[in-house]
Image (cartoon, rainbow, N blue to C red; front, side):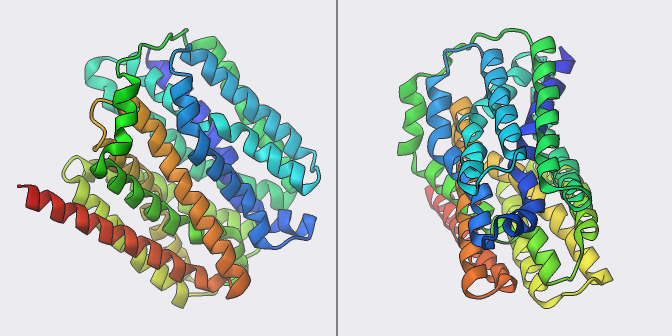
Length: 381
């Protein structure tokens, strides 16, 4: 039974690597198609926007079906997407191939958590969920920098082929090791849809979206930022991404420990640290020890925010946790789409160095909403 959560996490690694791996190769793609970074950025923001708009409803509609079949179907679409992308089709077709599997992205995420928790002993259910989120962390550690490295040594098409191979391995593992899991509808559709009438849930979901948007206004263009502002080459960028990811795993672990003590204090602390990091990013440039240390701190804080955001959303969804997991993924990706779109606009109109100020504004808005949530809680007492 213990291996089920790891197999499910392997699939998470595959789909998150496919989603975020493009961050490390956007400059090469933009150069290949002779397009601006704002247009190339749609390979990330378009993917995220589809998840945000369609993912929860597809997850809700598929609630009656066998979770194993849904996981296999999702990974199949990711494989097809990566094969098509590796062929370097016209940009419009590349964008279509990219967004194709995004429709089922939250479906796999929700099913993976369900598989891990359902097949774990009661006392191990929280740790099983942590393993699933560990797939996100490992994708950041290995997937994104390895993608950048492959593109710098070979071609960006090679990176998409690597994505496809990872998803083939994940799908094979799901077929072999995860048992059939017919869903048991524990919450009614009315209960789940009632989340949209819950003001606390909406406030916390919007806060999470703004935080993620602030993160991706800069991080979505990490490779371009490091190349233009810090003068790094492809191999150096992949090393920085690796450092970013390794510290991110540590940050994810620390965030989990802090969350057990105080969710809101952890959220506020990470938001303040993000604002500080983005401010320093504006003033520190070139390939120096300060850049390396700041990138390490950035990765530490950045990755922990995913777990914090998901926990912040789920904490306001009692009785509809599974649908909330899907909505959490949707609001996170809405933030990714918003952040990368704003970041692309700033790059075209002002220059990539000013994306940090867009991030500061968005993170600041999230911090204000966190304060409003605290005030409401205090007044209710």
